[in-house]
Image 1 (cartoon, rainbow, N blue to C red):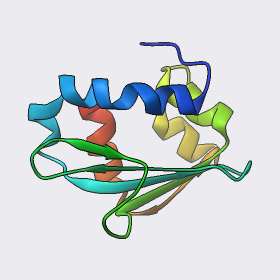
Image 2: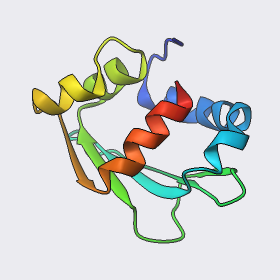
Image 3: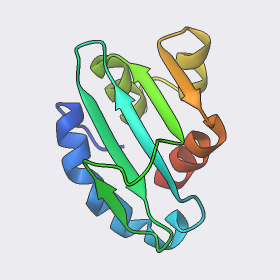
Length: 108
């Protein structure tokens, strides 16, 4: 698992991760939004060809995740499982959670 100092650093690396998983990402096109209580909003969209667009969505998000930057980084870095984070109410998910689960599985 890669270590990232911030959520912004992870999002900067996301296109590289997406390029490595491009063939698999075709299986789960969707629009995603991350929101933090600190007021940050991050958006990413997986296009039907497997490419990933970062920064703006062409449509409403399929799934929005609300969590602190610290908790999101813990999930990204594998120190906190997404299921445990949901059970402990460290993250909230609005929309299609199945799209989020598929994305997490493909990027791991």
